[in-house]
Image (cartoon, helix red, strand yellow):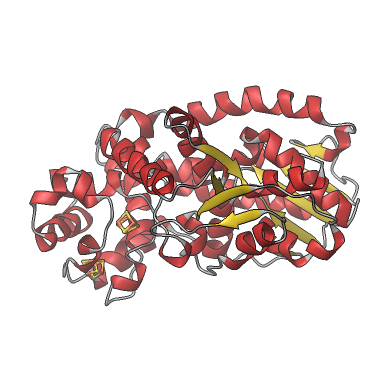
Length: 373
Ligand code: SF4
Ligand code: SF4
């Protein structure tokens, strides 16, 4: 269980301000932090945690953090700076700091997106029972497999619909749980409300328990990371969608040819989460005849973030970061930048079109090969 005060206290007790996490941090060079000594930046962070004094370096360090986890392996004290900085947004707000516009409005932004996305997703469904966004009675009908869409899954509706069809081919006893009530808490965490994020996570687990599933398949890698952090005790197993689909590829074919060169953007929350894995998306692409995978700079376990968190927290540095990531993909000469994270898709997708780079989900490519996308 995540407890925000414990996370901050543990960090304050053990961080030595050595600065190693700053040296490996991929966003620092895009911010005002680039001209400061790594040790000074972290001393300011400790001053904030110990004395409640907000300095400009600490503030930028916290709001610019991508939560990419690239610093995890660099910290000699085995601390988690990304999780701590996300939690510290709440501390800054308690101390009277006015958050950046992107952080202050993220909750209403998410709600507005979902208000439009849910009715539009419902129109795609043949059976309305396939999508649950609230419970109408205390004892809903049990289901064997829950495709857990959370919030972002519904925003990426066409891909989620393809994912549902893929899972139905494996076993028809599947339904989707998602929407504002069943977010994993990440929106609250991004908004600097770590305690509300914990309550939201508990509420979402209650929703999953009510369906008494055998297994939960997660559509969003950030939900997977959140689950891994909380380690809830459940009677059902959970797995990530690409892992689940890759394990059942033999039940899905035959596959039609797609003659395209594809590069892959791996979501940092997945590759450096508690249980990192990047094989399954590649196995899915290998199953599609005609697809040639060309790896981009910083892929697999070394993957860079799409920039989403820094966009909400700092604006321009985040956009610079996102554009650099797109340029790396474009530089491979691939026809398609493929990905498997709805958040990365939202961040990279629209701007990809502006540089004539097709951005597409790996699940959509698989669905096209099967004639169901
Ligand atoms: S999580 Fe990523 S962005 Fe945040 S401090 Fe660590 S390396 Fe930097
Ligand atoms: S690497 Fe670890 S100990 Fe060193 S400054 Fe960063 S968080 Fe603190």
